[in-house]
Image (tube, rainbow, N blue to C red; front, top):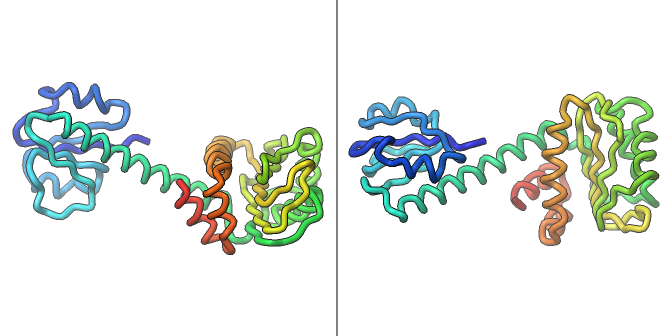
Length: 240
């Protein structure tokens, strides 16, 4: 999602500075151009960023970059940093929202002991079925997928069915200080997904984000310290 750029201009207009569009066209949309603070007050809450050639004395929650009328390289650098900051915050907010859509305290578990992946998958699958994420037989489908090709990546396992026929997309998150024997691996973190084909794009987005995050040792250590679902969600967002 691109941050919307709102510009407060008094001395020059958009057409006078084609470099603005050339430099940031892929990351922003110029939504409005105004010349009076009164106009800004009406629509400031509808934009992500304000660029102004004058200092704005009225307080706004929007990030604001004050630039010179002649747009120096320093001005472009300041705008670029602000855009990167906005995109980063949007990414965190989007992941937080996505995790809330597919997970919850009822499908989070810490420090339950399992002998192997079979025991862990059957236990987790039963909860996913009970909580309305999947139908009977879900656990068997996940095990068939696991027998054909292990989903363990070092100390992380991401079991899921080959079928995208779950009632709804969900993610069970299991943390255990005592490793689970998972094929040839010893696993401390298990993410079991139920996938509904209508939400497969949501699954792929979260899957890619979480795996990349959890494969970094400092992030894994921070996640393993979590004892509750709420602290787990916070830790994931903080690891971005």
